[in-house]
Length: 276
Image 1 (cartoon, rainbow, N blue to C red):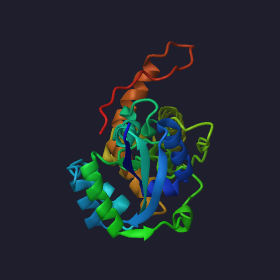
Image 2: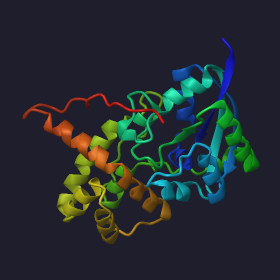
Image 3: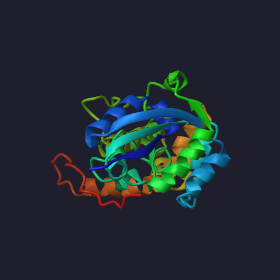
Image 4: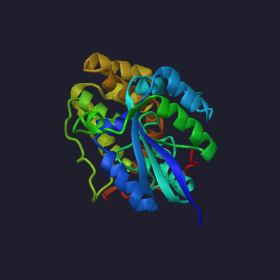
């Protein structure tokens, strides 16, 4: 069987949440591929637009937030080698919407919960990969990892659910994933969803939180008035949730409704997802 290569790009949120080594190990464990090269690049709005235009991926309603995420922030480009490298990497990525990601894919894990900070990009084809690599290498910072590692915030920085709890003043976060646990996105979403509603009830913010879960910008603005956010990153992560919360809201409410009185909730129904 012929060896091939795959380009997997970790977004800025991977550094912020300190997930680099965990993702490396997860990809290696699930695919059997070997990491053959790593380098770091920094995008401008122009270069990230050119990068995603290669696959006509700039039309989503959340695209302006993707531009904000990558603008002048570093990414980590990794090249993996082995049999069927690109095919295996594409299968492992998961749906753009984490709420619809197949179980066992990256985006169904690692507390991933919105379509903006969904951790990684995988090339659509070898031809596209060559073009993407030209863009990334033109903006390369080299392979020194010190600056990238220094961005680790020590908490789950990419989760809209976690940011919502932070805004509500609830710092009771789920533990960071480790080599024994990859952080189920569904379990984390359910934990934060229930906790946010309880906390909101105590603060008079039930309506704002419910509207936020429905994807209503009025709910987001209500949260901003209650607790002005400390940074543009915080605002970006919470705003990204507007594009995923309606899906999570339906999924989590359906799961709760399916539980009989007196019984503990079970696992969510298996989700169907078309890989992107």
